[in-house]
Image (cartoon, rainbow, N blue to C red; front, side, top):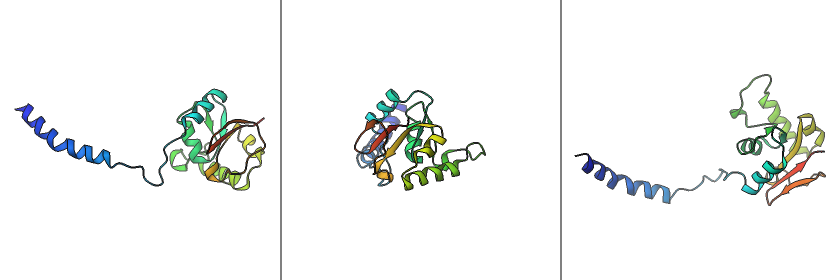
Length: 143
């Protein structure tokens, strides 16, 4: 009865599942997430509830790993309310990284930390104390 049906179902599904997962690759534009070393540094250095200023994508990812506030997130992930101002915040972050500051913009957003993804226009270093530096990301403290 039921055992035979389950066995037959397994015979058909197992090869499909094995084939599908063995050929599974990340899409070219997808990201593997933030490095564990960066996440550990943020959790260790940044006090709970502090604001971290970053580009919208990196900030959004960080908010999933650490108990911090962020300056911006992709507009599709934020309620469009007058208080949130998602489009304005994204534009602010884009201008900040395009113009390489000034750091006063991050301060005005309430940030005490700056997280730079070097692949998103953050190649030039900021003259701020570093709390973490990896191959792709740098976490600065804003005095």
